[in-house]
Amino acid sequence: MPRNLTYSALTLRVKASGESNREAWFFTAEEGIVKATVFGGPKSRLRAQVAPFHEGKLWIYHDPVRDSRKVSDFDVHSYRTGLRELYERIMTAASLAETILAFHGGGGNWPEAARLAGSVLDVLESADEATSSRLGLYFLWHWAGILGLRDGLSVDFDSPIKLGAGAKLWLNAIESLPAAEVKRVSLDGPSLEQARNFTQAVLAGALGQRLSLWN
Image (tube, rainbow, N blue to C red; front, side, top):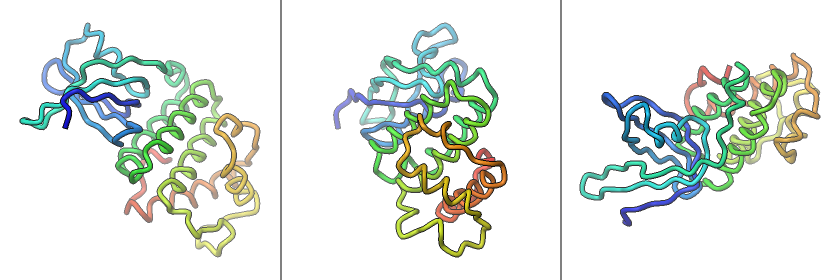
């Protein structure tokens, strides 16, 4: 295995490791979830680059003897600073990140999953409160499709979860809709709740739990 690795990566999570280092989890189109150490104190340029929801070209050095990975460089092309300007945006983004981690990157269809995550985050960066909520549901419904959980599943089937006509129409409509068009498809409050409960049930059935951030 080569020691120097290059990825197209989205930062999902960063946490402190020791006094000055950090552990970072990335979602890559090439290898799915990749974890690596970011060395450097608070004034480190690299530490500033590796932050949640930043996306770009990632260089990692892999030590095959210790089987350890460290971030060598990260050329960020999408900072998405707008996500932190609205509570609904950052919570939707956090839900997206934790969903990807919980499902270990989507079961191998990494390029498609990475495109989905990036497109949703790009639109989310300037979304209003209502659109942020719908984008979160849009991501979960398409994520269920990437995982194959919707294969043979119709939103018209006899579900134990009440699913009205509005929720069914909206879920069917967004299947072929780009993330940027979500704000143009209206959804009333009760239908949104029904669609959310239904989608979460599909994902929870595969995961064995509901993630708290889904709500």
